[in-house]
Image 1 (cartoon, rainbow, N blue to C red):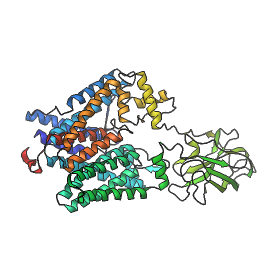
Image 2 (cartoon, rainbow, N blue to C red):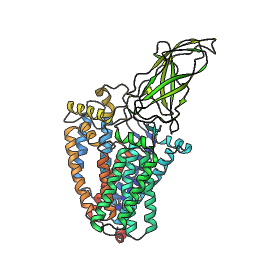
Image 3 (tube, rainbow, N blue to C red):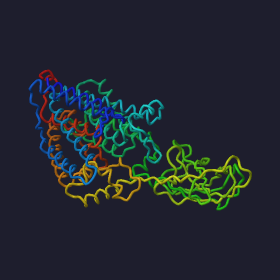
Image 4 (cartoon, helix red, strand yellow):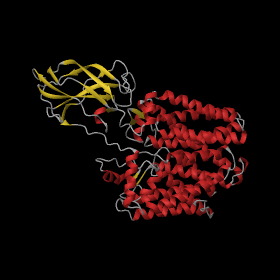
Length: 562
C-alpha cells in the first residue's frame, strides 16, 4: 500500500510541476508556501502516513544516497555559516533536501514498468499542455496573456523578440522543463511504435513537434542544443541495436520537422543574432546624422532630412513584428531632462541591414510651448525597447531646436531621463562568481545567495536579485564552496552510474531517461535552475525514475504484484 501511495504522490507532482503560481497560499513570518509546495508536502505527508500505518520500512538507500546526503549537509553548513542572508540560504538547503526525499519516494513508488510508463506519460502530457500555452503566448492571445499573470508578471523579450515561457517563471526554466518533456516523449513515441501502435506513435510524433516548436518560442539556445542531444542519443542507440529501421526514420523525420518549424518561427536575422552573440547588448546601435539647428513653430509638423547608420546586428525593418522606426525625444535646454519622450515614428522605406545607411525624411512635431529645446534622435523597436536605453548604446545625436509662436496649453514639466538597462551577461556573472569564490573558497557565500550579493561584487547599480550565475555547477561552488562542490561532484558521479545502469535494459523509456539526464547536465552549463520548485522537483523525479529503472522492473505484466 505504501508503494501505491508513493506512486500516487509521484503522479500528482508530475502533473503539478509546471503550474506554480506567484501568490503564495500561506504566508508565515519566516516562510511562504506556494501551491506547488503545498502539493509537494501533501505527497510526502501522505506517503509518510502510509509508511507508518502499514509499518513498511521505505527503501532509503538509493545508489546515490550517501552522496546526496553529503551534498545537502555541506550546503546546510555553508548556509548556517554564511556571512549574510542566512535565512535565504537555509531555505535553499531545504529545497535540496526536499528534492532528495522526492527521489526516494519515486524510487519506492515506481516499482514496475507500468508505473514508470504512467509517470512518464503524465510528465509528457502535462508538458504538451504547457507547450500549447507557450505557443498561444507567443501568438499574443489576450485571454492567455491575462491568465499567465497568475504565474509571472511580464512577457520576456530579447532583442525585441518575445521569449515565451508559458506557466513557468522564466523562458529558460520553461525551456529546461520542455527539454525533459521532449526527451521522455521520444521514449514514449518509440515504445508505442515498437508495440505496433502506429496511431499512438503518430500522436506522440505530432505532440513532440509542438513541444519542439514551444522550445523554439522560448528563444533559448540551450534548448535547441539539448533537443539535438536527445535525438542523437535515441538515434545512436537505436542504430547500434537495430540498425536503420523504421524507428530511426521516425526520429529523423521528427528532427527534420522541428528544424523546419524553427526556421519558420523567427526571421533568419533574429535567429542568427541570437545564436552568435551572448546577449543583445550590441544588437541595437545606431548613428544618426541630423541638422545641428532647427527652427520650428509651436505644435508645427515638419519633415527633417537625416541619415541613420545601422551599427548593430539586427536588420531595421518597419514591416517586421515588432517593427523598428526612427523617432526622437524632446529634451529641456540643458539636455538632461525629458520634456516629451514619445516622439512620432517614421518608417524606413526598406530594410536597413548592419553597416548600411538610410536617408530618411523624419516626421517631427514641435512642442506646444515656445522655448529652446534639445531634440534627441533615437530608434525604437516598437513595444520592446529604445536604442538609447540599451547598455552599449552609442552617444545620442542632438539637434538644438528653437520653437517660437503662441503656446498651446501650459509649459511642459521636465522629468528625469530613463536610465540605461543594466543587463550583465553570462561572462560578467561568471567572472563575478569566481571573484566571490576567491574571497570565500571553503564554504562559499551560502546557497542561493549569489543573486543577492553579486551586484555589490560586480559594482552594478540596481542589480536584479533574481539573476543567478547562469551555470548550475558554478552556482553550487559559489554558494557552498569547495566542500559542497566536492560533494556535488560525488553525487553527479553516482547519478552517472545510475543512468548508465538504467540504459542497460535498452528499452526506449530507459534510454529516454538518459537523454533527459543529459539535457539537464548540458543545460546546467549555461543556466542555474535548482532553486526553482518546478525544476528541482522535476530533476528529482528524473533521478528517481532512473534509479528505479536501474534496479530492474520486469515487464508490464508485473503491474499487479504490489
